[in-house]
Image (tube, rainbow, N blue to C red; front, side, top):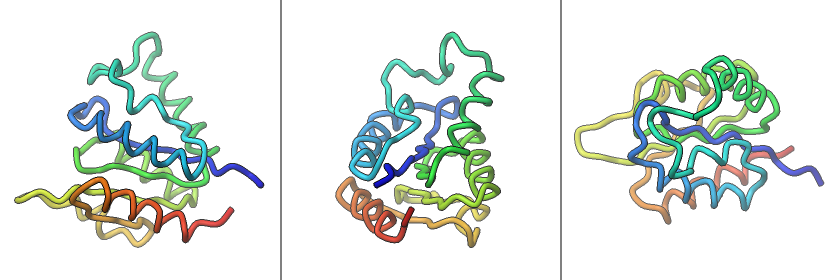
Length: 143
């Protein structure tokens, strides 16, 4: 049986306040397959981005990972231009996309994500609910 390849997207240069959450999500996603972007949850990955790689190298590598992936899971609570670009690219590549948004008073998910018919969106409050939504999404995905 083939291992599912998962592209996880979360904010880097848009802010790293959710890095711990990303690490928890990545660990849960690994129950469903290989996460190509494990580095998104690393503590030493700062808002400055990755050391030792040019922007062009990061773009080329990440685009290749998007092409290789079977699905894309994005945590979109912290707005990020890069994550939005990755979601749009994934849609263009006909990938299944799940966007996860943590409910917060006074904040709403962008209409360009929430209103897109090619994106599954899930609002959550805590980790247990979040993991359940991820598991439900993977029940609908077949290789």
